[in-house]
Length: 289
Image 1 (cartoon, rainbow, N blue to C red):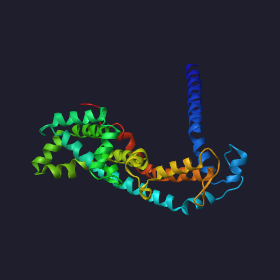
Image 2 (image 1 turned 180 degrees about the horizontal axis):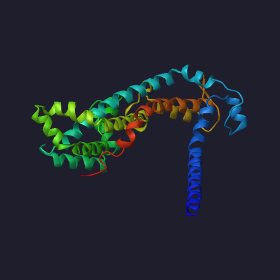
Image 3 (image 1 turned 180 degrees about the vertical axis):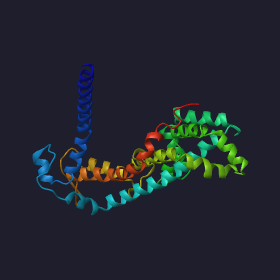
């Protein structure tokens, strides 16, 4: 009797969990589907029907407008360059500095760790950062984005904690076999740390792909603007109206949806390749020995 009651209770609990999860999935999925399907609908249908999920007429006109727009293709290429270049530089700098700060023999380790923590809590501010970037002659250059964000302190601290938790016996065995510091890092420590490295590659890639504020602050050349700035531009140019034409291109609602879809594709393509590292990678440095 107890077994039957427990089974019913378990089934009821499972049903409730599935209902809640299904509701949450619906809340997340509906806006995404609306944006995706709307990008394939016609402007007149969006203006006349209001909210709907499945369009009556499917068309690729919005994507045709986008790919015939030089500003869109240029900003897309710029965003790819910023993401690849910035991620490569940031993950290299973060990994090397985190490894150095994790070594107990490093002189000045404590003051350096304090400086990292201090910059995480207190930033220099917008105006001093802009003046410094200007004095260095980095305005209108992607280096203004790369160097200002080369090492994010939080990522550095988490990766440093991961390196500190690597087995000391492994390092001692490598040193006995004649491994120097560079060989120890590149041939022993780094291959064992690919979980955390892959996770932070994803974090940095998302960060650079979504670059918006600093791109507006440091880059004034319209030919170097990333995709997020182009997205803002077409939203501002269309204003509150549901349609407008600028430079021969129509910025109606389907075109806006198409830009959002195109802006999401690289991260959606990239994520499955890094998903297997996320479970462990998100926990790196969280357990202190």
